[in-house]
Structure formats: structure tokens, C-alpha cells
Image (cartoon, rainbow, N blue to C red; front, side, top):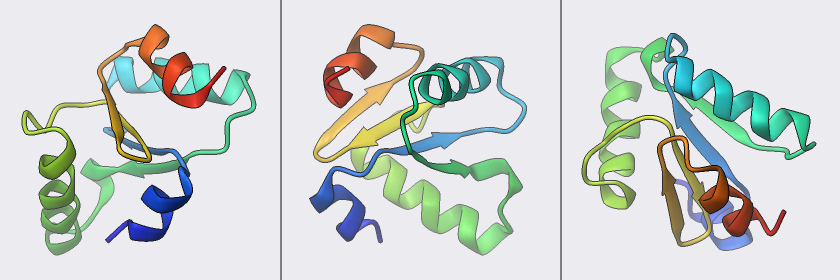
Length: 89
């Protein structure tokens, strides 16, 4: 599903539009000028949501939000040190 993004290291943020932690991580990335593909899972239709959650479960078995995927790495939750490290900030 995200083969190109994973291979190129393009950051993908799986989030919920109503989640305060997700909003803070989005702001953290935006404030640092990081271009990220944001997937607000709760705003998707049922079939697309299912597909996204299936992918998310392969990188984060807990399927929790926010989850930032950078290449083969997954940073789960509001982990700013992990985010900095994954993005080489």
C-alpha cells in the first residue's frame, strides 16, 4: 500500500482528527518543516479505514495513534525523541 513511501523514507503519520496527542505531533512536525503524509483514519470511509488499519497493524500491532512511519521505523505515541531520531532532526 505504501511501498513507495516506505522505500523512499517519506514520513507517514497515522492519526485521528480528534486526538490531542495526534494534534501535538502534527504541530511538532509542521513547526519543523517536515513534509509528512497525514492519514486521519477516523475521517475515512469504512472500506478505506479497514485497509489503512490493516497496514497500520503490520507496523504497530497495537494499532494506536499517533503512529509515525519512516521507512522501516515506526514511532508510536507522542515520542518526540524517537521522532527526531527517525527523521534525523
